[in-house]
Image (tube, one colour):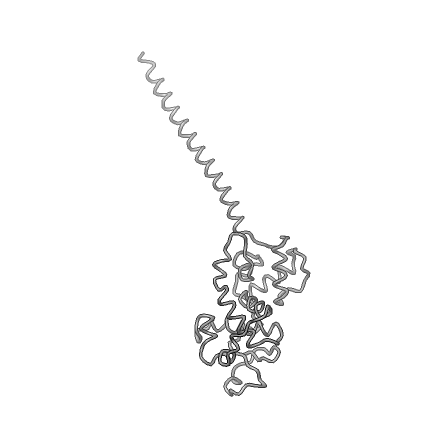
Length: 242
């Protein structure tokens, strides 16, 4: 009887150690399963295109960059060296990390949103601002080259970013004396699809005005001051300046 007590105690300790080890192994396994699931979910949400990628997203990237003048290659859905260089060029011009990877921020800057539903927050500029910007483009620049229409929208957005102007699209457009179309009522004309496309392209990062905050038509301008502004580029009948 006395000799059986140490054996029972030893068995109890061994059983406890085995139980703890089993629990520990179970926890580790659970962590591994959660980790794998979490990683796959992360990859699903944070999907991106990079060198070597293929598919519809790459095609969208190529179409956007070609329309904006960053890319001159084929729209083939293959993320090759030309697409890589174009993405880097776009990133450099738009203040993004220049890594050649079309990650979340780069895609959103291009107006491309993944299936996780993030487009709603990024499109909060959406309908009212887009419509107002398109009306401004149409009333101020209809008949101008497409790049010139985008440049007019870009000037509005550049003013929003500048501390010298109101910090909303509506505030900039309706600032007293800022736009002739507001003064003469043409701002209320119904814009066409081209004006909407130009407004969207400007919102998505294309700036043919190269940061300009003013533009005018040299053949009709009567304000001598505007001629003193540093000239950046001329597109169609409009002279863009800073």
